[in-house]
Length: 219
Image (cartoon, rainbow, N blue to C red; front, side):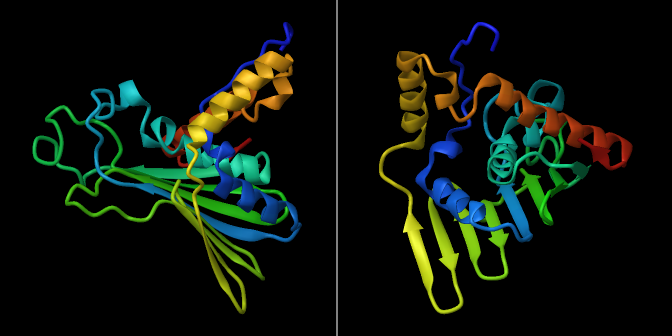
């Protein structure tokens, strides 16, 4: 920042048309809502995933994308409380014998304007079941079901709208914005520079602290 360098973190969902629509709706409202976020699935095959000392756990390694999405939609959270668990995945049967990470975690984050979000991460669906992942926002006048990088269902009292993801890849949109920002010498043209991405990582660390201590962490 002191050198006015253009930087970018790969939080590509900020550049997805579906998330942009959700943000437009959120920005219209100052009332509260409940948000349910979920990233669930099986155990990825990459080498670092199955040992928490290498991957940091699923929240840090993967679900940081949805956590960052919550920040982008609602601003900085005020508190986080989180729990984690093991015992569903059987090392040597469902995973490698050296499997040593959380099967799941659940975080509760509070924001201003009466917004509360739960964020679940799980990798124990090893029998072929893939739950729907994404963010589910419930307001008094609209329910928005963002299905991770696929579509957005907007439910009103008298209608339901299903919006598909745009054909152009959102990772391309991120790269394009980064290059345009370099050309324009405008660091603010990037939606998630290093300094902002670090804030999402720090919240993940705070959640891990809550898992370890059993206490609510103020942010």
